Length: 305
View 1 (cartoon, rainbow, N blue to C red):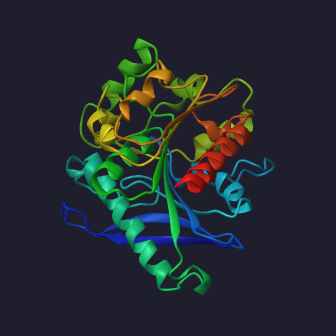
View 2: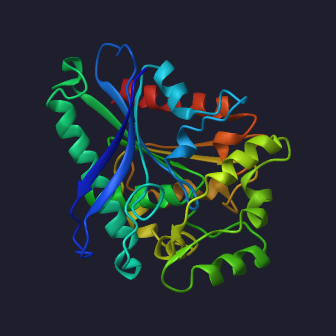
């Protein structure tokens, strides 16, 4: 099942005075099923990169969401958010707002779709109908919400582990995060302080170490909005497409059942909960259950659309 590493030049509404590119991985199943192509566009959270979606850990198979999707016959485009991972990290971080980042991701997707239609990754993909699902985890959920509200990039949106009603964290941790993202620049989160929120007690130490070793810097402008209660409430309320919300039993929302009300323009909002897991769902012992619930929702929405 081929995976292509891409570098996608974009020109955003802001001129950073330097070339800007989005790093991505495009993964395509060996055999595409009949009907529309399912393309899942995945965006990671704060301190992460696209590796979150395709975690290959020596001696620990089964942590790659991308590989699981390929086995389901779905293609995946995993992006590094602008300013993170292998994507450009503009020197002028003060110009890098979440809205600018979301535009960069929209433009990167558009470039991939254009190349797909041209047959670059196989004639069987050229001109085919597509069903595009935007998937964002944590801060990536926030950026996905902004992107969908502004550009309607996706046919449906899955927001995993992002809250618009305030963080369910201790005052100490919340204050530490707030102090870290207060100024301009790029920050490195204290993974040790976040461990109890990121990972349940049964996640193997080797897996956590591999995860921490791939940590990315995060633009502080993204972080400030991500922790602000109601920071993208207006954007969430403007989304008309179907929305899937997903939280673990240890997660960021103080009340997961209150979250769907924020997507009042959507014609179809689904909430699911993942037991025996913490905020980083892809490393949970119950991750297969998480992935299966998401696939079932995508297939269900496709059947009723």
